[in-house]
Length: 122
Image (cartoon, rainbow, N blue to C red; front, top):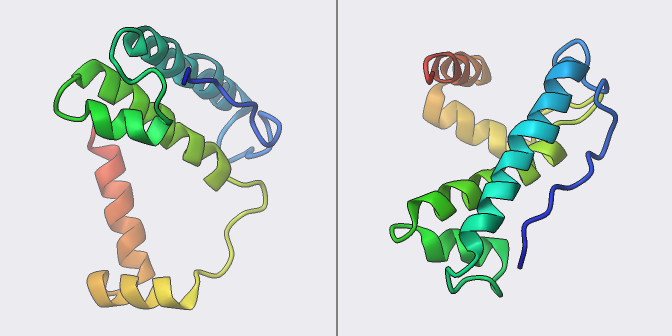
């Protein structure tokens, strides 16, 4: 099945001031679109054309690095757009907070580790 760039579930400026409209527009219209475009090109002739996105990710892992990367990044971005929410945030579900506290000590420690990992990747 061909990959398709979804419409955003909110306006480009919906997450200001945390993420600018310019950043959101670029990330969606250029960055994510590139994964869709390249993924569709690599999907042709792969034998996975009739598979779901999840099946393409699984089926290309370890055998077709280019297709895997583009399909996996498309999958990640589909979730990213839905997880980011205007006026989001709020309380962490109790069972998740308990697991974070058990594994990392606190939600603040998770936040610090997340920021450190994110700012040292590139």
